[in-house]
Image (tube, rainbow, N blue to C red; front, side, top):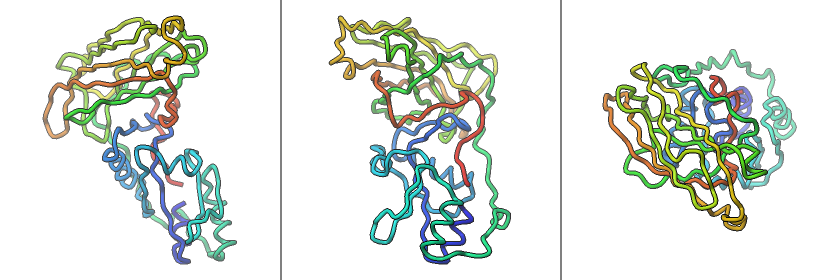
Length: 299
């Protein structure tokens, strides 16, 4: 994409990347931001790691731009000066884009090569050791559900991701995944000299959870950046909680943890979430859970 931009800027074509919700959180440790300020941190990180010269536009937290353009995670559009879409692809294809632009404004020859750009991509942040804690074996077909962080005086240095499996969605009996992930762009790691992360969760009548409390394992390593993850059995009794009220039902989660920042401070945090057992279409899907790779791409 960078070579196409270099060549066709000469012909008056503008190029923009659109930051939307992460399609595959956990790649290179990145997690979904909770507010617009954090999304802008992701934009700055993409610029840093890619070394790109293309400008960025950041979608709002309601994902209105994403929805207006069809909701695809890696789409590509050519828009004329009057705002009319004259070419659209559900998946970005720089080679196809070059051909489209050649037909619209003329061919550029010879085309710029990637080697000529001299791009110097940088690695993602690594704040502490990983691979210290074994990750849980996940049931198949997990689906992210809605998580709402409640107002907090402090940033959510640790971010909750919640998922349920297809068994629960189809039969009302299955698994709830709770993953507490450090946000690498906020510069923190776990302080394992302090008490481990713990949480409590309240469920409405008609929802039964295997345990209303959880405690992360004690880690011998002084600091690490692995997620703290839990798999809990979950059952829905439709005779008590009707299907009509199911989508509105909320689980209330309170989490306590200690974190240390690169600036030298270490302190405790207590934060709260509301969880709804309905799919979150903007949460993305985790691929190769726990494996490095992916992150921001530049083609």
